Structure formats: C-alpha cells, structure tokens
Image (tube, rainbow, N blue to C red; front, side, top):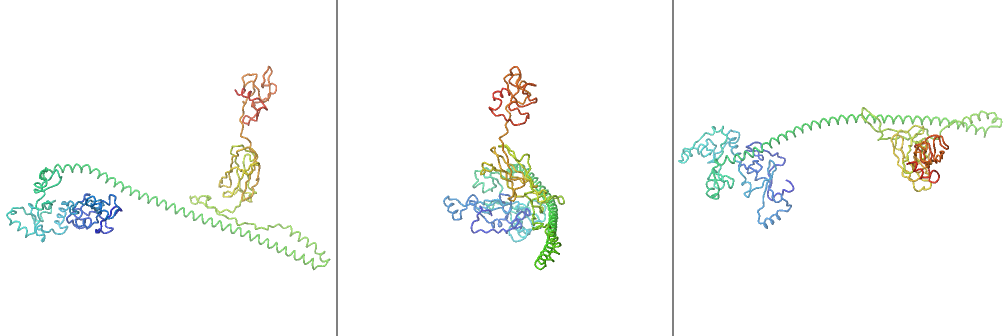
Length: 577
C-alpha cells in the first residue's frame, strides 16, 4: 500500500503476500481462484467475487487526496462538513482505485455475463454441479426456458402441475451444452419479483415495470429490445475507436519484447567481449608483472654480484695492506740496521705498489630502484601495459640546458629553454618525475622573481618558460635535488621589445622619394645638384639596399635609430611617404 493509502482501522486484508493476481479465465476469481460466486464488475472492468472484495483492505479516499491526518481528525472533518467518508479499495488485478458506492461492495454492478459463463462451465462438467434455483438443495436436471430457471426433478414436476407454469417449455440440462447463454433472469434490485425489461433513457439504466410507475414515472422509458440497437451502436463505435489503440499497444509491446530480446543478446555479446578483453588484459598484466619481477630479480642479482666482487677485492686489498703494514712495523721495531737496509728495497717496492692501487671507499652500486606505475611499458599481447622499473638516478652535473640563446630574451615576450636530464653515465633518463626547480630573478630586484612554468615531458626532458616584464639582467637557477645542473646559474640579458623600422628599406633616397631633393637617408650619402639624400654611385652610398631610418643592411633587423642622433624624424616620415 502506498504512503497515501491509509487503511481504516478494523479492516484486515485477506490477500496472501506474494500472490500473483490476475484472471485465470472468464469464470474464475483472480483472488480465490475458484468459480465466481456473486461476481462484481469493477470500474476497471475486472471481475471479483463479492466475498473476496469484502476481504480486501479498504482505505479512505480523503487520505488519498491529501490527508496525513489520523482517523479521529478525519471524523471531525466529516462531522463539520456533514459529509460521509468515501471508502475505496484497490483492484486486485490492476491496482486501480475503486471508489465504493454508499452500499459498499454489494452496491457494485453484478457481472451477469460472468454468472452465465459459470453456469455454462458447470453445465459442461468442468465445474461443480448446478443446484436447483427453487429448492437450492438438489442437482439440476431440467431448465425452464420460459422462466429461465434451473430445476431439479422434484421442482420440475411441481412446476408442471401449477396452472400458471403448465405450458412452460422444459429442456433437459444435457441438451443445453451447446447453448451460449443459460443465465437466470436479471431481477430488479429495488423490486426483486420483477425482471428488468425496460430502460430509462434519463437515468441511463435498466428498470422494471414497478420502477416505471414509481420513481421513473415521468422518465422516458422503453423496452430494452427497442433501445439496444442505439446504445449497442454507440458502444460499438466507442469500441471501434478503442481497438486501434489495442493493436498499437500490442505492437508496441511486441516491439518492446523484441527490443528486450535484442537487448539481452547485445548485452550477452558485449559481456562476452568484456570477459574476453578482461581475461586477455589480465593475462597481459600478469605476464607483464612476471617480467617486472624477473627484471627486479636480475637487478638484485647483478647488484649483489657487483657488491660481492667489490667486497672480495677490498678484502684482498685490505689483507695485503695489513700484511705490508704489519711486516713493515715489525721490521722497523725489531729489525737491526743491517736487516732494515737489506729488506728496504722489497718493502718500499711493495708499499709503493699498494699505495698506487685505486679503490672506491663507497659501494660501487646503490639501492636506487623505483617503480613507475604510470609510465608506458609498451604492448603485451596487443594490450597497452603500464609500469616500469628504473635504476637510473639523475646526475645534476650531467644534465644539459638546451635553447636557441639561453642568455638573451625580450621584454614581455615568452622565453623558453629545455632541460635534458642524464644519469651518471651521461645517458638520457628517458623518463620524468624528477623534482626540477627553476628560478628567474632580476639582479636589481632579487626579491621579485619571475613566475616560471616547468612542464614534465615524461621522456627525461623538461620545458621551462617564463615572460620577463622589464628589460635588464636576470639570473637563472636550475636545480635538481637542490643541486645546480650543469651551466646553472647563468645570466640572461632581457632587452626591450623589438623595435620596428620607421623608414623604408630602399636602394637609394632618390628612387624611394620620387626624386625629392629634401629627402635624407641614415647612410649619410648625398647627390650633386642640391640633393640631400643618397643616389646610386654617388658620395656616401653603401652600394646595397639599406634602411633609411638607421642604415642597417638586414631587412629583418631591429631599428636602432634614436631621435636626435641620426636622421630627423620629419625627414624619415617624408621618406616613408
């Protein structure tokens, strides 16, 4: 039951938990699974026995519409509004809400069609034997087609003896098995002795003769046989509009079923791919693991052998040294002058030879073995695997700084260089992960270092970049493990931003100015006839193209003209024009 469906006190549901609800046929109750007994038709068009419905757990409809209040508060509300509480139940088949009428479950519509089906099934021997409609004691043998009553042998004889029913048509029960309807007459609930034969158009429901002369006296009424066509046609029209929805829903469900099947197949296929991939990947990782462990064992054996060899050599050298020291000390303390002089040559030769032996006071190998789990290790059975064992150790003295010009830069322009890390043997590390520290500090403002960026390229190189904001001299520190690398620190000169040329790159002033006499050039050349600028082959012409503003010969060079020291700015503009 949902949170909003609050049961009324005193009612207990008889529905077993976990029971699957659903019609097992047109004649069996979805709750008790037996043949219908006084079946009631719910608004959702599902049919349930009256007794089974009465055993369902009811709830207050008011609670469904917004009440979390308890029963006592509900009662006070109804009393204040002078209303009767609306009781509801849930359909045991589709869980639809059913608002019970004032009379409760017994006021719901009787499903006469289901009752007829139950009688037919019982008649065919598929259910329990029919009981006489009159005595309700003996099994049925005949049926009065006029009264539509099922009678036992005794009641059938009594039925024939009565004058009123003498000429009624009696049929053996076995002869009714081919019939589609053998239901009892439908009697009026208000007048149980009268059969419903008429239909009230105003109230839209069947009525009996007593109803017509009673509460339906002035209502338009007619026999059911006369109005069935009109109402039947309206139902058929509505059915006609509903059937396409049934077909569409069936098709939709069929598509969902097919899609679900396809989904299951696809999931199974993908799951198989995942398992195959995972199993292969696991095997590749396990093989890679074994290779790494084998490599680690080989490194251990190699280093231990080197240490053992160094140990043996040092032990032998130590023994030789001790022998030499002990013999010499004994000679000097115990030998005579002549004995010392006689053995001096051998002793000196031996001690000199021992003193010349080179040896390392430190172990020849180190314990620098590290595992890099994020470093690519190539392919293993087609799978990319990660994790390498490295024994190299970066040597700051072997590292190299690379760049076009490490000592020059421009203000407000990004400068960069590369640090190549090497080990003690001068070989590239081939991996990243080192603690590289870089500082760029102005010489005149040591407390204002420039922000630097260090990018680990994961291949043993590090890209360093920075942007000096002002010109001047800067000191650059590059350290690894708090030790300066080779070439650090170094000085970098930051010049002003590249200055563009203010003049023109020309062959001569005469050509570029269109023959103006007042145009001048920074080369200092002049022409006869009052021309203040240079001309081909005349005095001061450099003999090749040059800039009119500063006289430089390189077209892509930086302009060095400074106002007041070379060609006047006004004349430069004239030349530029």
